[in-house]
Image (tube, rainbow, N blue to C red; front, side, top):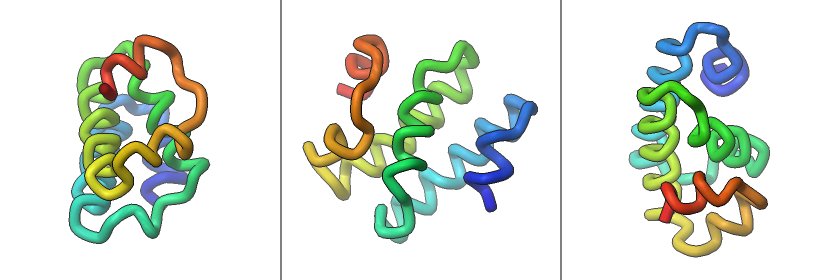
Length: 88
């Protein structure tokens, strides 16, 4: 529900808070509950103009990286060079 309704919300603060909650969830339970589609969505959100969304998307990706290591690049697919640089 958080992904479906929170990340697709028009309210930027709601999006940022949902990303923060998802990052905490990934940190506690791992990436088994996160699909490839959701990973790609969050990776695209790391290129957002809003600072809090960008930071929380990167926090989410950092937590996912702890569990996946370099396999994260296979999951998120092609991203812009800016996002790739931020994630590295």
